[in-house]
Length: 375
Image 1: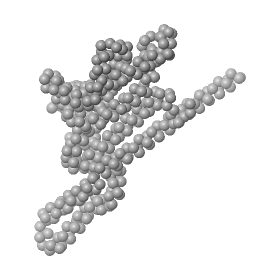
Image 2 (image 1 turned 30 degrees about the vertical axis):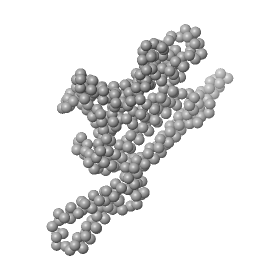
Image 3 (image 1 turned 90 degrees about the vertical axis):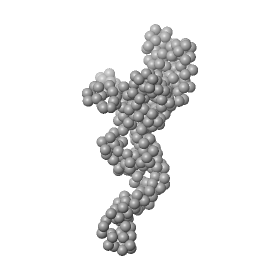
Image 4 (image 1 turned 90 degrees about the horizontal axis):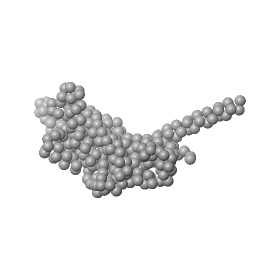
């Protein structure tokens, strides 16, 4: 009877601990999400103020409205039978109606918060100059078409960079002081150059000189009709930009992480594991790689942020039809709605990246107490 009661108490305690952990995880996730959302809102609002020039763009829009109304009334033959005062009165009334329709009659601060809400919801209306591939001028459609190529390129490059760097760093930690280790240490400063810089040289070598790979773009022209051939074409066009992403950071990240692996491999508990007869692979996985994961994730998070911010030039160099290239085109043409939309998309992507990495960091590092839980 006593054993049954003890078992029941242990089951209840285990259930309570599980519920408490889930509650702390939920609280931690909620607080991180709210913090990042506030950061995104502030960043988007500042971007709207900067893009609008403190109301300067609204003045330009008002001037465009006046010009459109003037041309419209000039083409109306009935205006010729009216006096100058009547024509001016109709002109001003029409202009004021158009201004009220777009909300330009409200104070700028009121308009700025309306722009903020429209920006956060990507309800930005029509682009002023740019078009989507389907011919739509809706900013939401333009961004929707360009978001998938950016996610495909950046996710592929980042995942390949992460796993390649981890395994290469482990390989170097086993060969500390070897020729290849010294080469990597010497090459680490080359990671100061951005990915697009290496992309230019990759294009010159593999596209211009050797002719093995395309200069840019995302797919052959005309696009293959067969889905498999279409996928192969996309992969072929991804080789150079993904290679530029990996090449720009692999030496520095491998050097950093190899150093961390060396530090942890010299700990006493690693020597104890060796004395117990554990294999080298098991020791690396349990006692070297696992405790270094929090540091690696932190380092990789900084690398990801740098890669996201460099996507604009990288996609422009390779002619990749993503958000980065769209941002460059919108800036050149001063297409304010598209500029604001791309800023919002990048804010969301960066916030999502930081959010996921922060959650992963808390899960892999037992020293991080979710939701402020006690030790």
